[in-house]
Image: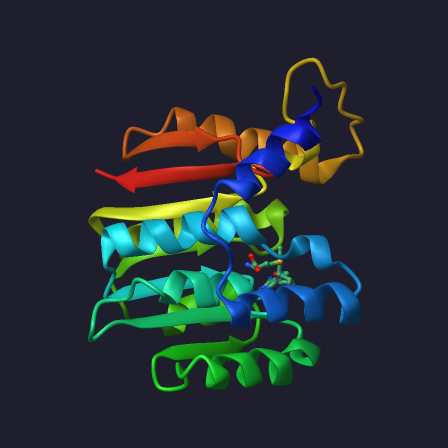
Length: 213
Ligand SMILES: C[S@@+](CC[C@H](N)C(=O)[O-])C[C@H]1O[C@@H](n2cnc3c(N)ncnc32)[C@H](O)[C@@H]1O
């Protein structure tokens, strides 16, 4: 049995996507150049489940893409909760806003078009839950930027920490492969970071679940 069989079985035993998300998933695959950036069915349901467990008042996402994960993370918001998401590609804006409106979240889901490093310092919030999923080479910069804004006991999720499997020791990384070096260094840093507790989930392309002490 290969890993495709395992992933298919896992999908078959995970609550299906809500219809709006299934439509956004399909539209993203038909109309965008890199649809595999979208979190997708199983990871999306995990983000929703974590959001329901945390019941966050304030959620931050870095890297919106078409808005799929933002909609999943918004599912568990507290009644007075709000989600801020940052995307630097303005071509994605109209689709994101259309789906946010269809989900009835226009008042609670705030899209910021700009670079994460520029937008985050302008948001005077204390975060209960943060999803870092933008340009991976800057994972560490975003982690250090947002960690002081996360409440003690709050959570961070960092996506693509397996980086297609290139993080494992047996993979020989070329010196020029800056992204892989950055993802490896970031994962090692979090593992040694006394400020947090962490669990590495080998779901999809790897999700690092971090709790600030
Ligand atoms: C992996 S995708 C996000 C997927 C989305 N979180 C989801 O799960 O459906 C990464 C996104 O980050 C955006 N991005 C890249 N660099 C960025 C930056 N410096 N600031 C904000 N967004 C950035 C890209 O344009 C892309 O849409």
